[in-house]
Image (cartoon, rainbow, N blue to C red; front, top):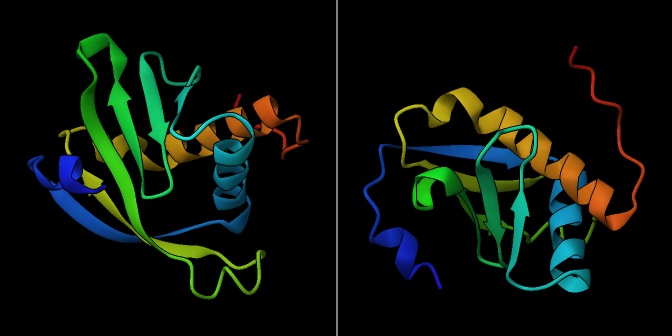
Length: 127
């Protein structure tokens, strides 16, 4: 299922850790909403994230669904035994400015999923 991502030119690759709550929200959304699932990030105008069990692809829907970044290669070995543990993954950047929003986009995804799933999430501390 990673073939579409493997054909994209990657600018930079990072090893990242995703909070357990965010990973769990995505898994819940894939089970309750749909698989795959497209989530618009209202906090980032024009950005959407396409979720499936293998990867989460952030795209710019204003610019012909241009790939911005993707989270993939989720290491769920420990997480399958303890849902409170963070999940390690790979983050690939496909756009020059992706590094500026990689953290805030993931936070916005988590908040939007919590809203759609009816889960009370942490308050947004931004002004």
